[in-house]
Structures are given as structure tokens and as C-alpha cells.
Length: 219
Image (cartoon, rainbow, N blue to C red; front, top):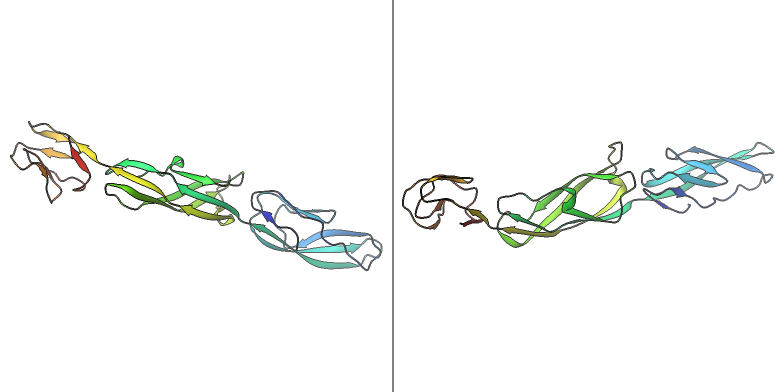
């Protein structure tokens, strides 16, 4: 077993043990079990940064340069997953709006591999009601390379929740009737306030339902 590596970083092993019981002059070659892009030079095995994480059981052929005798040995190399933490950033939104899922809505501790980017992520709010103590939970991130290959399995990912604040929306209208972005109004006398059915009423009743009973402030 040789030294381990990390996904996204070029890997160079230490020297594996030389063959013995021959004339002392040997050449070595990779036989099987090695990833694409692997190379061998002077008993040192190298992988490029795009080598997927995992454990590789590599068969190496040793050839005695004088007698021609050969022997095969298995060498184990592990490329570890890359560790990152994805944290949902705090968001403050107006009631009735959706939270953002743009790149600015989360942050990453640790680095992605040079050719990788986050293609998508799920951000789930704990509530859609007015709150100063809600949360946003990140999950299901998809990480791809420059060729759109899914590289997510090469990462150990920890998710951290973020703060969610939802503020009152506002609604305005005049006493002569007309419409607003949330409903139509008529000059029918009624009570001031919010009805249990989710309708606004002031001295003039609305005749159109609002998305929710909560979350609006009259202007």
C-alpha cells in the first residue's frame, strides 16, 4: 500500500519496493487495475487530478533485464474523496416570494476540484409563514466537470442550514374601487381587518382571495 491522494489533486506515489532475487536490474510496467491517465516512472506511480476517488488494486509487472524472468505484484493506492461544507446563506424575503437558489444563496468551505462546478442544489425553507427564526436546508447538490460528467460521488459533503426571515408583504388600494396586484375591490361596506377566509376587508370588502391569510399588512 502506497501513500494516498485526494480527488482533484495530481497524485504522485512514493517509491514502491523493488523486485528481489534477480540480477538486480529490473524494469516495471503497469498491467491492470490502474485508472486512465496513470503513469509509471522509476517505481513511482502518478495519476492526474481528474482521477476519480476510490481504491485501486494495481498489478505491476517486474521484468529482470538480464534473465527475462518476470513477476507480478499488486499495489494498492487510495484516492480519497474531497471534503467540502455547503452552507445556506441567510435570506430575508417578502411573504409570498420564493427563496433564492442562485450561487449567492449558499457558500462553500473547502474547494472544488479545478474543473468542477456546482450545477444544481436544493434549498428548502422550513416555513412559508412570517418568521424571524426560520431555516433553509441545503441538500442534493450536483457537481459536474467541464464535460458535464457528474462528479458528486468524489466529494464528502456536509450540509449546514442557514437563517430564514420572512417579512410582511403590503397591499394598498383606494376607496373608489379598482384593482391591485392581489385582488379586486368594490365599494361594499364591511369590517376592517383580515377575514378568516383569507380575504381583505376594510371599509370596503374585497371580492378576490389572497394567497394566504397571514403575511400581509394594509397600507
